[in-house]
Image (cartoon, rainbow, N blue to C red):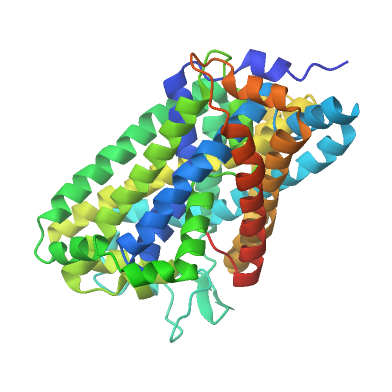
Length: 467
């Protein structure tokens, strides 16, 4: 009989801090940097932030803890962990293993879409370092993708082919940088969990926070930045009665914390028995929120210095609106732009390696492939599909994030809170803890978190995505 623990015994996180850095890296991504600031701007500063903070606490104290615990208890990714859950309840692994394939597919699907986005981020980071971005002045529409956003006219693109996507333009001439993004992800993962993922995140995540803090401090002293802060700290009590504020704040927290039944489960499977789940989940939620707030404190005041309309920037924020703002600041803007895109690059790389890790681990666990062949396989397949879907990246990401990811989170929640026996679940979450978690955790997860996953799935389908 095969031993599902073999992979984890061979490789895993070497320290609690390394695990936390990797988990923060998996959570901190485009949802924090790209989407969070314009959601805050669109729904009114503190009016959006207060519900967001509430849902971060709710999801961090239930879904994040549950997925870490499920992975460590199962000593495997979602397929193995779900299989172990149904085996305990019914005596058969097969139903859980079949259901566990969905989060693996979701992780691979997101990794493919992320590969396209990361191609653009690598390109912009390179152009910000060389000064090409600054030299283009304030007309970034000639190079930037719109990812399905509305574009008033067909711009003359510097390279590639123009495609109409939902009324917008998408430049598919970025294949070289998509290859770069995928190769970088593969090289890190070749080095293993401890040697590649953990070590790289120990460098990238602190660097990301340092860069964002430096940017936030500098921008705070620019003329006009105070207007951005005034907006951030504005509370409209009547706005709190708007159901859209709550549903989009919930979606932002849900997707920002990366509960999807895949990445957090697989990282949990690499976790030692001496690590306290509750404090790890708390740290991940805190640092993930801090990253989003730092991005907000960079982007909203920066837009305020030029009078830019952040709430209408939408998906074009990072690739069109912000470079326009930075390039309008003179030479200092060139430095700001360089710091910003390097920070975004670190956030993206730390996320994409987590997304590719789940399918790679699946091939290692179930097909007994070696680390390098498994990593190579998922990246080659991911690259081929990513190059093909470039004109439809927005639709691809919507399909995965609206349907597959919430369903994966729901399945993981059901396995832990409904299928696994209560005593088993509590033992799993309390393993390594000096102080046992309160009696609130199990019913809270069962009757609050799991229904919230259903809400996320239904609301996302009805509204075309909420996170």
